[in-house]
Amino acid sequence: MEIQQYNFIFLYQETAALTKRLFIQLKRRPSTFFAGILQPIIWLFLFGALFANAPKDFLPGVDSYGNFLGAGLIVFTAFSGALNSGLPLMFDREFGFLNRLLVAPLASRLSIVLSSFFYITILSFVQSLAIMFISFLLGYGFPNIYGLGVVFATLILLVLFVTSISLCLAFVLPGHIELIALIFVVNLPLLFASTALAPISFMPSWLGWLASFNPLTFAIEPIRIAYSSNFNLDLIALNAPYGDLTCRNCISLLFLLTILSLVIIRPLLNKKLT
Amino acid sequence: MNQIKIQNLSKDYFDVKALKKININITEGSLFGILGPNGAGKTTLLRTLATLISPDEGTIKINNIDVIKEPRKIRELIGYVAQEIALDKILTGRELLDFQADLYHIDQSNKLERIELLINQLDMQNWIDRKCGTYSGGMKRRIDLAAGLLHLPKVLILDEPTVGLDIESRNIIWGLLNDLKKDGMTIILSSHYLDEIDKLADTVVIINDGKIIDQGNPTQLKNKFGGDRIILKVREFSDSLESEKVKKILEKIDGISQIVINASQGYSLNFIADRDKDLITKLKVELAFSKFKIFSLSQSQPSLDDVYLQATGKTLQDAELYMTGKRDLKKESKQSMR
Image (cartoon, rainbow over all chains, first blue to last red; front, side, top):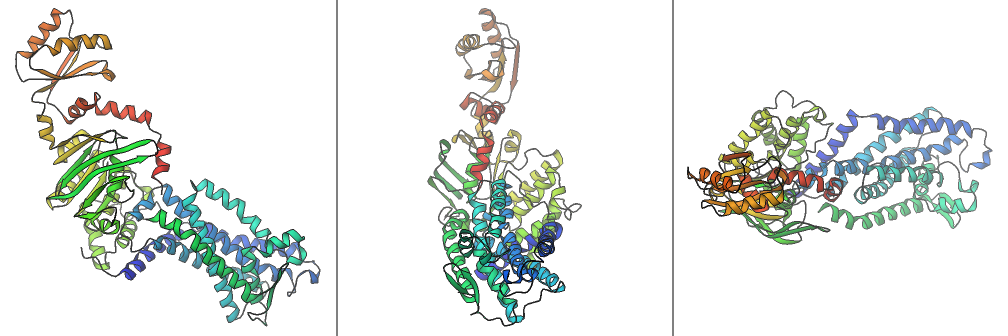
């Protein structure tokens, strides 16, 4: 059989096949997809109701708690999805399906990582759009086109950052039980130690410091700003204890963290995938 | 022409020496059998050939391409069907083959043609569009084999492909392997089924404890004994002392050779006897003279199991049972995970 000679076409073909497989799995078992939309919406209702009577000066730059919460929930949805992205790979490892990929003459084994990234990014976009649309129906506004671009750019960076860590864990940890345990331990504490549910000014000093170094905060604040009518990248997004950060600063920090994580995990992925 | 050359191949898993200086040459277009009990090193050898693990020592060349230095080129040449069938339960059989074809970069028109051909060859028409999670063991094995053959590999590596299968599935697979061999494909087949290797293989290597015990054409290996295999028991459950005494008697009789005491079968005595019609009578007389009665005596053509027994003092079946108790499957599973 004649095998085509172009690596780029091969990379596209194998990445598309791996991504398609993940979407077929999603189509036939869509419960986690719908749960990923439903959970933040329930939170939006419940937390929105819980803090409906909070004093107005408690929330900087917004006029209702629902407005404040939306950005946090969008980021949390993308973060949770990306954190779980290592699970399918872990199951492939455990059930031997990964060997099927490893004995194939893949143009690059990067396609295994790329497919997970594409899948989670598309999933997060769809889930985020659903949350944004429902927030809009609840009267919490909608970003303009420019703001929408910032929302998605921020989500891409966050997804890439967290997905790379999750895939790395899928190779390092002994099994899916350990991975799920770690996800349980990390997921909610990271949410509560960010500005998703409350601003830094409301937090005790130590938690404020913690939140101002939390990558989730660097994703939440630009998205929160993206919802404002006078949005621009140089608006102050975060009053951190170490100084003010603009929207641009937050996205740049997130970008740096993403690059750093990719650089750190690359040797490990190379070792495990060659 | 030797298509595959394995030289001084060694592999350790911590304290376990899985392969010890293995040397094998495999001729192009032949069916090469690897026989040995579980835990003998067959899977390690095949996984090394399939580029899944790196050896600690030694070289492997397929079509003069170094497996360790150029694994991607090798992956284009080989089809690998692992012992554990790893299918995606959510995909249908057809979707799995389509997925596999994309991993091997087969173009669209060839892909559909190849998938249809294999569906027909392996008689999968009635269930190919069902999800893999609903398949029986035989169906799973056939779809796995089809996946390994999709890109028409030059070398097909099969790790115990018929283990636990029903007769129908086994016959279909045997038939296909014979057809592939006729078409010139080199097939490497590991098994612990003697009849499978005996029936299919042109050349066989017998492995035990990571070492090669013997290799050659199955008929030649069996003919090396030059007589019939006899299994003798002087009592249903004898003991070491008694069987040693009988062994000494047997050693004195001309025409009897290669005497092995098989402790796991009630200290039976296994030996090769020349095809001399008076020999058994002579044996009975000698035993009676030493006041031993014959409890049972069976005579058969030597099999590959005798080659194994001769080298290890155990039959393959006994070695299986022994290894089953000795192996830490959980540990091995973790070692095999990437």
